[in-house]
Amino acid sequence: MNDPVGLAGTGHPEAGPRGTVPAASVPPDLPGLAARYGLAPVGARPPLGAYLRELWRRRHFATALARSRFVANSTGDRLGMAWNVLRPLTQAAVYGLVFGILFGADRPADWVAFVTCGVFVFGFTSQALTAGARAVTGNGGLVRALRFPRAVLPVSVALQELYAMLPAIGVLAVIVLATGEPVSWTWLLVLPALALQALFNLGGGLLLARLTADVSDVTQLLPFGLRTLFYLSGVFYELDRFPDPYRQIMELNPAHAFIAMIRGAFLEGRAPGLSPWLVAGAWTAVLLVAGLIVFWRAEERYGRD
Image 1: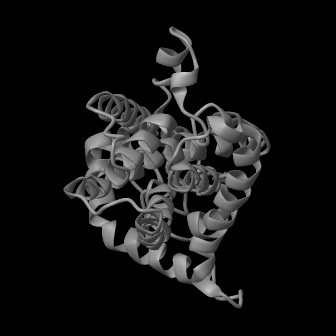
Image 2: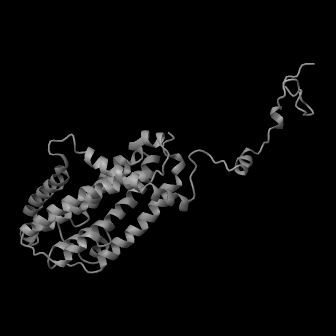
Image 3: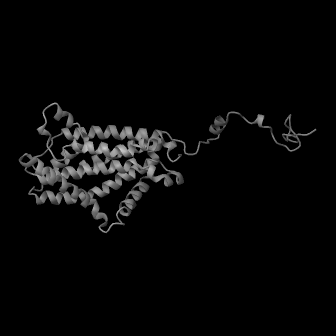
């Protein structure tokens, strides 16, 4: 008699001559069997705590990636990394000239430093969010080739933009001095303000990276959203020209809060008080936690298109 399943010689009741076991005898609970022997799906999302610990262990990878791309992005240009300063400086000159003419006598006395601070600070967030939105989709090969917490990519983007902002802040300080502003101890507040803004940018980058991975059209809509935010953030006008409650609502804008913090640090007589710090801190905390959780929940799907 033929033994089509090959159970002979195995001791199995239905064994045939080749000593194999029929498919019907394989344990049906494969997930349970995998769990019993400590096996897990490849690329499975770890618990949030373990994910954060793994992300911390990869911090050197994130910083090295940020530094290398910061340098690489400018190697093809004649002026190299100088464009990190020249780009916002040119924008500040254009906006300062155009809106300076439009506002005429209504513009602030410290107009040049006022506009330059606004353009530089808003540009920091704008560049970080734009690059952060493509942190995953723009690194498909890296995501598919290596195993690491995908949050490393938005983290490296946030660091890369921070590296680009540091020399720009140095140039901003020179411009502020050239306009007659004195050096003050309040200049030290620029460092914690930039650190807080970098964390805000990271939270926004995590959230946008997840949204872009799901719906690529987000990158098409993002410039319009950032442009709208630019005109609502008091980059080249003071919010005092608006009556309450509109002024109070606009002061809740995180972009305006960061601009007010830097202006208050650099420009004499523009100390913003505690309010912008509280607004910026609250937005940063909410966006960072929400962005991390939203990004982490899709960890298994990145690179599996």
